[in-house]
Each structure stands twice: as C-alpha cells, then as structure tokens.
Image (cartoon, rainbow, N blue to C red; front, side, top):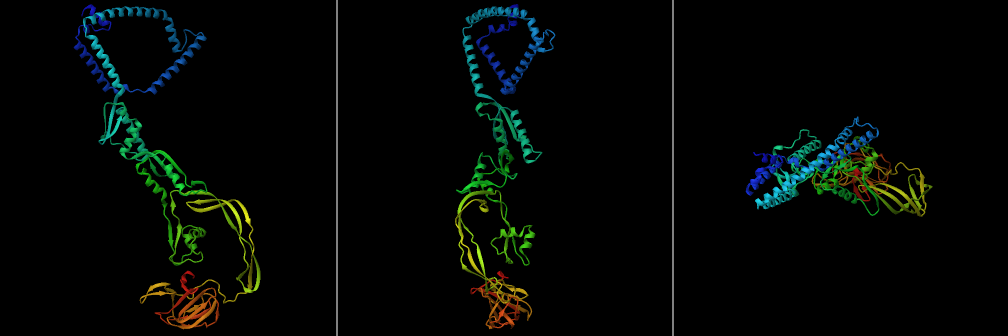
Length: 571
C-alpha cells in the first residue's frame, strides 16, 4: 500500500472504492444491508423502546445535574476552589483550567475540517467526472433508504404465539409472551388455590418474524386471549352476596342491570325506597371459569332459592309446643308460619311449615301509602240476670269511625312486615256499641262450645269413603273397645233421640243448641232418655255391637246445620 493510500485510509476513506465499478458498489451496499438485517433479527430486543423509562432516566440525570450545580455554586460562594470535595466542582475546575487549550484545539480542528472538505470536494468532482453513472447509484440508494424507513414504520419485529395449534395473536417479543404466561400462572394459582398449576409450555409456540404493526396486540389483550383459551380462570365481574361468591359475567354493567330489574319486580308507584337485605358487592377480578355464565342463567339463579321450604307432617301425640321445641322455634313463630291452621286444633296428617324457602336475595320495598282506616268503637255492657253467663246481646250496634292514614309500609319479598303510621287525620268519630251481658249461672248441661272424646278406645275407622263390604261413605268415626265400655256426652245439650234406629242399632242423639248435633251408635244399652238434659262428660250409654256392626265399638258422628262433618276436626 502506497503512502498516499495509507493517508486516505487513515482519513477514514477506502481508496479501493475509487476504482470499483457500479455493480461492485451495488453488491457492497447490498451485502451491508443484508448484514444489518441479520443483526436486527438476532438482536431485536435492542430496538425495543421504552420511552417512559428513558424520560425517567433523563429526569434523574437532570435532577443530579441540578444538585451538583447548586453544590458548585455553594462551593464558589464559600471560596473552596480548588479544594472542593464535590466531583462536579472538580470537573468544572478541570475544564476551566484547560479552556484556552481546548479552544485552540477546536479552532485548529475547524480549520483542518475546512481543508478536508475542500480536498474532498475536489476528489468528489473528479470522481463524478470519471464515473458518470455513480449519481444514479446514489439516487437508488437514497430511494432504498427511504423505502426501508417506510417499511420500518409499517412493520416491526414480533412473535406469533399459538397454543395447541390455536392462534393467540402477535405480541412484541417472545420474552413478552413468556412474561404474560408466568403472570397468568400466578393469578390462576391464587384464584383456584392450586399451588402446582402451570401452563403446558409444550403446547405453546412463539415464532419470531416481521409483522404489520397494526396486527400487534397488547400484553393485556394477549393475557385475556390466553386465559379464554385455557378455560381455567377469567377476568370478570363477580357478584358476592354476604361475602359468598355467586355468579360472574364478562359484560360490564350487566350485573348492575339485573339487580335493578330484580328490585323493579317489587317496586310500585308508591315506592320510596328499595334495597337488598343482604350485603351485595360486585368486584372485577379473576374468578374460576365455572362461575362465568350467560345472563339468562344468572337471572334464573338470582330468582331461585338457596334453601328450600322445610315442612313437618303431624303424627299422633304431637302438639304445637313439641313441634316448636323439636325445631328450636317458639310457638308464636310456628303459628305465624302456619296462619291457616286453627291454633286450638292439631290433626294427624297436617303438614306444617317449619321454615320458608330462602331466596338468594331479599328485596325490601318501602311504600308511602295513604288510605282510609276504620277506627274501632268502644263496647259498653249492661248486666242482665235473665241471660246465662257467657251470653251477650247487642241492643245498639256500634259504628266504626273513619281516619285518613299515611303510613310507611315495609314489604319483604312482597310480604308486609311493618306498617309505620306517619300521619293520621280523623274523618269521623266512632259510635259506642251497647250490649247486654248475662249474669245468670249456667246449668251444667249447657253446651260449652267444644267437644271431647265420647269414650276410650282405638280409632278403627275414619270419616269419609272407605272400602268395607263395597265402597261406602262413613258419616263419623268408629272407636273400638270392649263390650259395656262407658260412653259419655261429648258436650252438654238435650237428648233428642234415644232408641233403636236401622243401621245404627241403639242410638243416642244430642242437640247442643248451637247448630251442632252428636250421634252415638251401636250401643249395647242406653242410659239417657228422650228429652233429658245432659252435661258434658255425663254417662249416656254403654258400648256394644247392635245394628250394622262387625264388633264392639262406638260410632261417633258430628252434624252441623244438618250436614255431617269430620269429628276429628273438633276433638
């Protein structure tokens, strides 16, 4: 290599390029471009920009620079040059001391640069004069660079991710995909409680390549897609009732709308407030996929019950007290649950409600109601010695007053539970009722209004239709016992029949004077006679098997206003 070539190479120029043909220059440029592309493919992470981190680093650098400047100014005021312990101050002193030398070097550098440019301009003119096609090559190169810049603005490096053959999208890099997978594994373990859960990475592939920028998805979108594909957990809106997870949906606002619709089912035009008794909370979080369902199923669940109704069938020997004690209830609570039953009569076979069905959500609806209400009247009594004790006679009927009422009425799932009167205006005053009250001592035979068992024994036949020698209708009940067992009046009254009657054999009928009559049939002998007044529990006959009978028993019947009724409803 000549001395001139060595000087040109030292100046950063390749002397051999001056003697290269156009095709050789083109091939050299193409090789450099392919080398640059290979480098980019192998080191794509070097081109990942993190603008926020860059700004943070610049901010920290400026903050440090400001602190050092302040320290330098303080040192200058304290005249601590050049012994300052601050590194920035020492650096400043160093540059200050070499300022003149650096300025001369800079001036010399600019002078040499001008000389070099002048020399390069002459060589460039000589080169273009010698190689007339070279400007075209440079133009093509410039166009290629512009095209490359355009391509880089539309395309970028990325990774195409698939799981078990299913396309999950294009992410910024393989490393980004691995990071999302690790985060999803942590979330799944925390959500399901399965500490050993991992994603099967053997089914996960990430192919690196160049892709259109518009096809790239964010890490959050990729995480959601991967979660849906795995089907273990979902990021959704979860409904909690009293802290218990119930249902979930991925639709924003859907649960709120369903809850409002549930309350609207109980609201009226008079509603002033509606709310849930339970603590209802909606959270956006990861949840097991089994909780996520469509809105139709969610609506069905919210309208169903989480606990069904509990009932009890009455057996022999039961009482309201014993049943309430068995289920840890008060008698009052049991009676309230079974308001349709007579509290004085409990019959075998009755089905009592122990607890009502419990819904998932309890809706409280408070209404402001205005209505006219009856005002109760007072009753004044006048004693009358001609009437028996317990008898009353109205001589002047009372009249209810009227009041305009305004009340806050509370309903729970449609049933009224409370009525708070907030205002009352009397429209009319009530009129007192006048009654006569009997004081005459009641005779022993006088009806008490309730019935007792006429004899001891076993219930052998019930009231109603039965299969015995063909289908027949039984107008009473049969109580079996030994021959001659005593039979007593079920209540006080007057004997209206005492004798033989076809089918009944020897029969006693007692009229109790209040629309009720009682029948005592198949007796072996009669004690009470026609027209006799008997008191409750008085001996009236003895058991036998006369008439149409298959054994010793007492046929006991109760007739009310001319129609036989079931005696068991009154005993």
